[in-house]
Image (cartoon, rainbow, N blue to C red):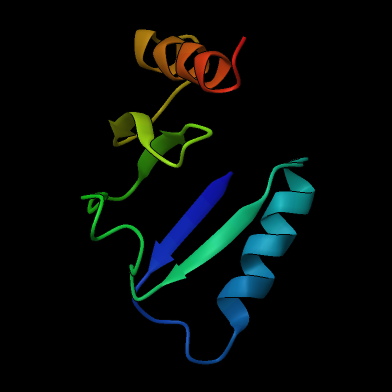
Length: 88
């Protein structure tokens, strides 16, 4: 699941941009806009970029603040967290 948190999106263009990026990047998982940071604020996901792995119970199982590059320990850690969250 992806959640994009932005405080403003008055004209609806953000949803279109997120959908286009998801298609271009081959993202097949659910992606949601968190308008006004209604979800991100209570769970303290307040930096951008911010990557969070949400488990099947809806809890933040792992997270990373800042740039994320494939092949780094941070990337590998999040990949492992995804596998754990999926029960693998």
